[in-house]
Every structure is written in structure tokens, then in C-alpha cells.
Image 1 (cartoon, rainbow, N blue to C red):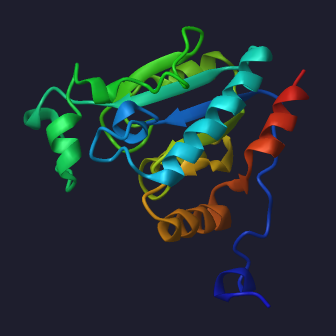
Image 2 (image 1 turned 90 degrees about the vertical axis):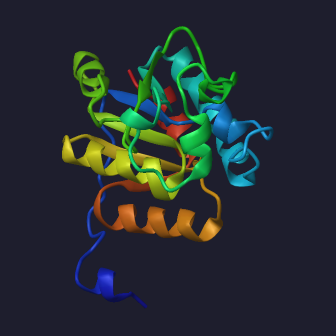
Length: 205
């Protein structure tokens, strides 16, 4: 039995896989992966970090493009009006919570700071992907209903084939995680998993 969306054609087509993929890692920084910080005790994000780290190893063996971002600000004057105290108080340039998780950071990949939810918003990411001739992006990171979803929408808007590895994404709660994936899967992306994406990356020429 379908639902109101599928009944009128949402999700009728698959996005499919291209020939030049890149892996995008959204905000797997200490603030979300280290339990000493206010947002660092979320089990789904810890699972996502482990799965993403394994997928990145596959991408590196194939010498494929990887872009990983973290979020930080100079202070309240350049910060959007976040409703999350930890972001306002801790996500500041030089704070240790802004460092990428050691399982994610690597000298071979493109790493940069973003200031909005999307990895694309006023960042050098699109230039990096175009210069690498990327046609497919695999989105990973946190949080699924926030910065991951924003990144998926922008990747779609720029014309990339978008794949979201479900087990490489995490959120504070399973409900918003599943809702966000269901929604982007109807419109903008193929929702997949790390095993299928690893197989795809190993087969890239």
C-alpha cells in the first residue's frame, strides 16, 4: 500500500550513480563526537562516525575526492541566530570542539569551516567538486534533520547525483533521522547505506 506521496508520483525515479563520486562529511567534529561536550553524547552520531570512517578508508584507497567540514564562528556578531546553547557558547574559532574527529581528519582530504547549515553555503566546496569533475556526492555526517538535509538540498540544486548513506548519518533521535531521510528520498536523493556505497567506490575506474 502506498502513501499520499507515492500515490501521486513522489520517489518514482532513482537518482542513480555517476562515474566520478566524492564523499562529503558534514560536521563530524568533536562537538558531536566527544562525550565531554554538550552535544557529544548522541549514540546515533557515534555510530555514524564509525561507519563514515570506514567508508572514507575505501575512498582513500581509490584516491577519490573527500570533503569534510566543521562549523565555527568568530563570535556572536558573525553567528546566525542559532537556538542551541552549545552552538552559541562553544562553536568558536580555536575551541577544541570544532576540530574534526581524529577518525575523520586526514591530510589528503579537503577540510574547511562552514558557517551555515549547508556544506555549500558561501564555502569553496562547489569549486573543489567542479575541479575534481565530480558528478555524484555521497553525503554523511550530522545531524540528519539539520545540516545533512541542508547539504542534500543544495547538492541537488547544483545538479549532482546525491546519495545519502543512512548509517553514516546521525541525529539526536531516530524519529527526525528517519523523517528527514524519507523526505529527501522522495525528492532529492537516493537513500542507501555504507556497504552499498563502499562497493560502488571500489568499482569506480
